[in-house]
Amino acid sequence: MCRELTFENKNRIALYNNLKRLNKDQFKIFYGAFVHYWAKNKFFISKQNLFNLRCELNQLCHELDESFPDQYDDYELMKSFFLAHPYYYMDILPIELMAKLFSEYVDDRIDILSAIAKTIFETDICTTYTYANNALGLNEQIDIVATQAQNHIEDFS
Image 1: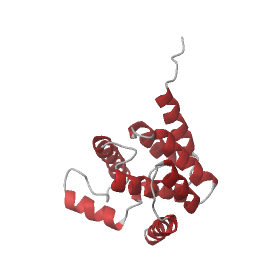
Image 2 (image 1 turned 60 degrees about the vertical axis):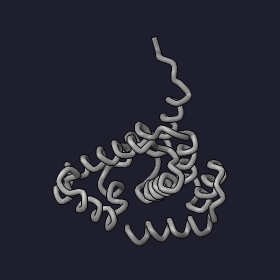
Image 3 (image 1 turned 135 degrees about the vertical axis):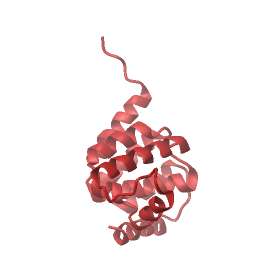
């Protein structure tokens, strides 16, 4: 007998499917938006789930690259590494794996996050931030936020 998918599970599946279509550059846009909206408004993921997601991503990076800092050895080294390489996850980990992990750990407004990923795939960074701003009921200056996000990606890629 098949188990019925709940609304939340359908949203997680949609998020996973939208994320795995992104290329590395598009995933950087997604990640930048994800971090932006979490840092400013605590959207999309609880503090505990964010911690768990980062721990898992860090461990996978350390397993693939011995020069990647061990998260349990030196917090300050880990912190300085990510200040210098904020998109390292996207550079080393397979997109499908990151899509799986993000779709498992996010726990708030999954439908909007999924639509953000879809918008990134189908359009551009400005349209993505415009959609997110409207869907989340925010009033940010899109041209400034999108330009800052694009510049950040270019500076650190």
